[in-house]
Image (cartoon, rainbow, N blue to C red):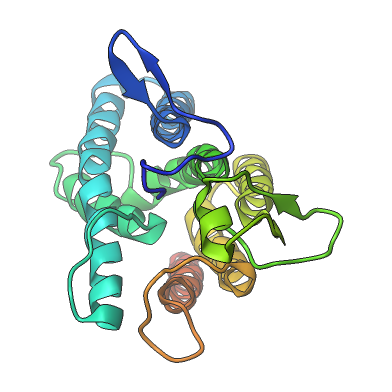
Length: 260
């Protein structure tokens, strides 16, 4: 997440005495898209279950309320591992994802009288996560955070004076727009999960996003803390996410075999 005292690609603006930052606006829009798509999918796929669908949507809203502080806390833990002190002000997507799931899953699991399984709800949620995350990454680009390493490739961009990359490199340097790389991938992933992977959407999300995030981290150059030499914290979590996705696919296959 960008520090708000920096200038990004798009400057902040003041309206009715309030200062608005592009990153914050895209983040809010991303949350809105996630909730809106989930509401539409879950109502469409589970027609006639009005009360249960409303409960699932409310559970997601509660979970998302916990996502942002969880994102800041995990980022602070990463910084503590590297610097020996808690540094608040940043946020990490994985922290938000873990925080939201830690609230969302128990609420669904312990609801009495439910007819829609937790795995079905996760399948509904799976394409909504990358769709909302896509807007968040575009916000990162406009805010100047999560930037890439210097490059001479045709896709390279130069951030303006006063931006975080400009100050980091000490001048105008052409760098990888890793935020946009990820935004494009997330949009394609959301479409794939919605159109082609309905019943196994969540484990496939874990695997596909985990692999992509592990690879894109090699092109990033912003400070994300450190846990193990040679790997960023996000890469470690990406490997765990891939393992969770693979384990879920195995679990579903075994359960299907037993039923047959």
